[in-house]
Image (cartoon, rainbow, N blue to C red):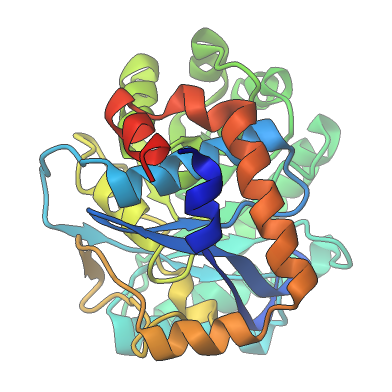
Length: 346
């Protein structure tokens, strides 16, 4: 038996987003069931088979593996504001405060088609929404996704610090760890590393420590909860666990990671459910009173059927091929012996 048998049972899905995020308005992937629950495999299209293999290892852990003991059963959550106009940004934050009890916000900046002036206006709108809704000391984080050069970071960061009236941290302002190290020596703002961790071919622990104050850790893209915890222990920095624009099914992996990390740097980036126009469940996993419960979520089969119907035969075939390629590229070497045996017995 082999991975091919499991692939034959995997169900491709496509769910729309309420607005554009990462240059797309849909979220695609596959889900499959194992004895311990459902796994979700949904790496973004630009990732190669080796990186996608990490996502598959995390998905297989969800379905066939076991998670460590929890240190907390609830996780604080931040809201996320995509690269949108200032009115929409204000409304998103107001809703997050009033409906979800959230007081920490992460804002996308430096996205394609948006100027520094656009980013400043968006950040100011978020601070205004926090202040107007009773949380003037709410924390603001910005996420650059590595889009700045070092020179641009030195200029633009100051403008956004002023617009926010102080930042909790700036996430991945520059692409390289070397530039992050230089910027860190020039600013009082905490530097958080995301892509520099999860997209690295190899993990340079010393370079990451020199470049960052905070680790942004995404469970599925790093191979799952156990793999991510090993990496966190090696690096030894405070952690913010983030989702990877998952459905409510896939989000469980990051929730269990956040429930297992000893030292969290405040609220975690698990509030992306607000960006889903539909989901694999009737009720999307969202924060209540600023927290989420650490628990698994199984798909509602009628919702899964609807999401599957939105995929073409070509997309379904492409996901099957990608899952197989990801297994042989790296996933088979990342999963635990127990998970590997379970997969090969499918």
